[in-house]
Length: 531
Ligand SMILES: [Zn+2]
Picture 1 (cartoon, protein in one colour):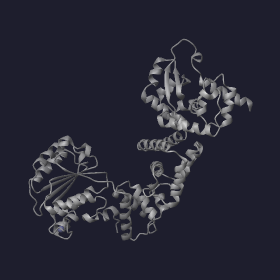
Picture 2 (picture 1 turned 45 degrees about the horizontal axis):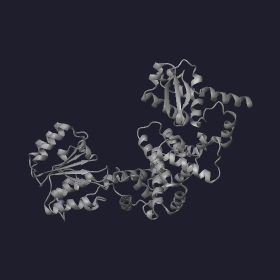
Picture 3 (picture 1 turned 30 degrees about the horizontal axis):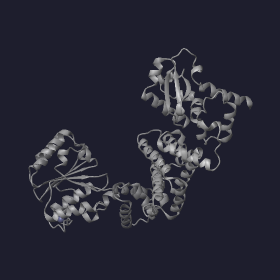
Picture 4 (picture 1 turned 120 degrees about the vertical axis):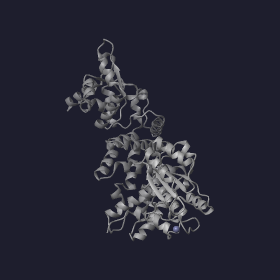
């Protein structure tokens, strides 16, 4: 026996079965009952929210021989014909693959013939925003003077792409994303029908992951059931199949970030990836976790809004006290940006690592919120009496508390004359790895950068000084700077701002700039001698 996907098997056949779009269903039923049916409808909303499902039920209802309070009876010839897909009165068109003028002209010709049986011909045009301009114009002519027996239902996920002339002729219905509760309720109901035993936690995780789409929820559920066929569906199984991680791991991750434990954070990420967890899913879930934390902080009555167990709520409450809202918002911002970047990225893991490091080290960024975090951290240190006034006061090193204490102190004493400012750790790393960074670049860029001198520009930027004007112009383009920054990120796991400059004067380079290549290599030599 072939397996029918849950989404097909349990596709609602009547209005009452549709979940989460009650406002639309009620209006449509009222129209049918009152006999005030429109000729053009526009159904907008994200995927999987029931647009075509409702369109089909509507088509049934308007043609039904014995409608019950605006709903199709499901028994008459017309209802059965439409349900089995054999009715001539319901025409489904996928505009994604039929977007030309000719496709719409065909419809216009067909429309001139009234239905052989039943009352209405219903045209359901899915993904209607994909139509070409010509096709829209052809459609407009039909919408201007539709025959009385024709109904158009246009469905789209992107209403803003539809010409205003079309919009103004349609009744518009906005489909909502379906809530987690509603989806979970429906899934539980269906699993009972299928006689599959489930853990409520498992169902809720799927409902949450579906992000408002009932169709996605059902296909995720399908995957999970197929993988553990004949077994009880547990939370652990769902995490396994979807490549997700347990909430406890997020708690560990956050605590490491608060402790500014970069090594711990990266190691934890490594562990997740080794265990086959999906990096994109991790980013989404962790953002959700941070969002819950923020909600919990903003009000005492938020507990019901959060979709988590009591034990995890305890952890969350503890963490809510460990971190201030401003900082949390900065974390959420960085992680939401990250999930956009990840969509098209090849080096997903490197990007996630960079974002995590950014969270641990606000000193790498210069925007308002990271400055606030730096100041708060300084204030905390001062309160704890860890602040040492004196010469280092104007020095950037005050902000660099993440550096191991002794290493930092050693550099202060020994190398003060050579170092114009303390060199940020990330820049040091770039200088040390410079050869290997250059080796990874594309041909032209690699050759032009080989003779470059490295120095430090204001605010911890890496300054690349070139003596050749052509080389400077070549390197200093947006695309090449980006390529270089990406390679730096890949080789050193750090994000560094880069500035390119031409060395114009006749003076030797060392007299104008601090030559980081020399300073840092000298440090290495000295260390070697001591050993
Ligand atoms: Zn019927």
